[in-house]
Amino acid sequence: MITSTVDEQFRIMIPKEARQSVKVGEEYIVLPDKNGRLILIPVSQVDKILARTAGLWQGRDDIPTDGVEYVNQIRSGNRLADLGISTNGS
Image (cartoon, rainbow, N blue to C red; front, top):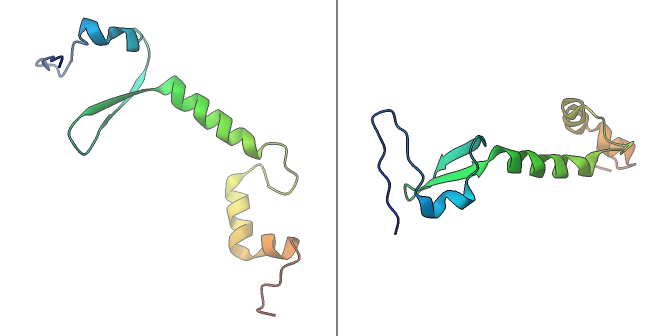
């Protein structure tokens, strides 16, 4: 086990053994888990994942590019009507 101390300015020195996983100057999301551990997630990694999943919806003619508009259509039942599905129970 490797240990490190939090200083008076709430900084933590990354031990040498763990430095190969951390890039100087990289921005990280810091999340505490339910066991009190701090999880570091590179923001660049999150951005790549979001870009990949957002790309699944690009270029579709049946989905508005504005997500709010799409949700409004779903809520109003227009999306079901567009698919030829009755929304009046018959």
